[in-house]
Length: 78
Image (cartoon, rainbow, N blue to C red; front, side):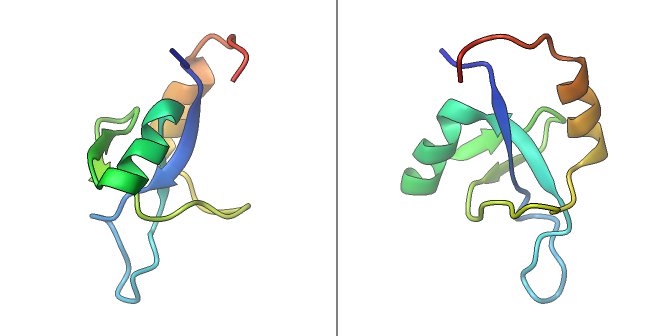
């Protein structure tokens, strides 16, 4: 099981033009499943949402997710 996380969108916290305000870190192995099935994922900060968009370089990241991610031990091959 992979413990690496990747940023994903919080669709519940959006601007008026459907552009996410920030992206969240979620478990890598849950991203594809959510994108295909629409199932909910849980971000490191506790936010729950379906994956609908991928972040682009420079996209804003949830500060709480970033803080938690920075404190995780690195490891794994993913």
